[in-house]
Amino acid sequence: MDAEIPALTQAPPQPFWRRSLAALKRPAVLIAVVSLLMLGWQWLETRVRIADLQQELARRLADNDAQAMAGRALTQQNQETLQSLTAKVGALDAKLAEAQGQQLALEAMYQELSKSRDERLLSEIEYAVTIAAQQLQLAGNVEAALLALQGADARLARTGQAQLLPIRKFINRDIERLKALPLADMPGIALKLEGIIAAIDEMPLGFEQRTRASQVSPPPKAAAGTGFWAGLWRDLWTELKQLIRVERITQPEPALLSPSQVFFLRENLKLRLIDARLALLQHDGRSFREDLQHARDWLTRYFDTSAKPVGNAVATLNKLAAADLSLELPTLSETLAGLRNFKMARERDYPPPIPRPKGRADGSSAESASGSLAVPASRSGAVR
Image 1 (tube, rainbow, N blue to C red):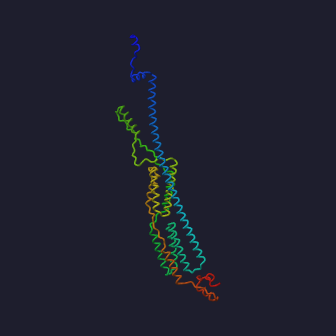
Image 2: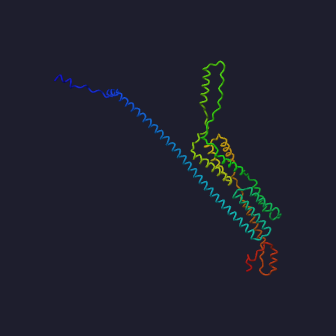
């Protein structure tokens, strides 16, 4: 029994770390552990890269959404501007139709009514002043209004009648007021805007700009007696200086635009300049300056200002923005009112004669006395 006791006793168990070390000494286990470590490191690196890609993708999507919202807002603004311009054009068409109707009515009245020489003269003067007032009100054409008023004044001067001097005073005062207006060169400004619009498609964008390589100075000649290592160091230093170039950035980095965004940018810039041209024709100085300011901001923000066409366009817009278009044109209402009052007073002082229904001699004498001012009997209602 005592001899069997040592055989039944077992050795104490070893610690876990010793068993792990013993297991690591096996090649298969060691390879498996190293493989697991490499897989874990690769998994962590992949997760980090995926997270960075997700952040970059989210940032770019946010930038694209912001640009799309800005484009939609700009498109909506252009649509509203187009609607307002359409309404203005409709109002101008209505005024023009009204003016044409008034002209036809005046012509019909001129043909139907038999007037005397003075009444015809007053009608012609009133017609000329009305045309001048319409030119000032509808088109802002000061030159045409001046021509109409000067023609009316020459017509009055040829008559030599003293009773028409008050009307001449009114017309001469309006002529002097129109001549004193500081007129802008509308055709020249319109031509400059047309030139900028035609050159927009050829203007380079800001993100297409390339850095200009500085002129490389020739390497200095090796002095006599210099060693091989000194010449080698000098050549190496020259090559290194050509690899590195430092430039000063004076403006923020231009935005990157897709081809569709570039197309809409150029078209919206053209629309802005067309709106400025319409405001120029309407003598709307505030809208003209605002449109030029927006066009100038887009040129300096998205286009290469170092290019000659862009620089010339910006300089031209700066000069055009200083033009004063907010002129307050006269309405000629006082002259028209004076003409109508003069005609009413003349009709009140010299009423037209009424033809008598009986007697051929009486009727002929009345007609001969009144001339062309006699009212026909069928119109007056005296003869039935």
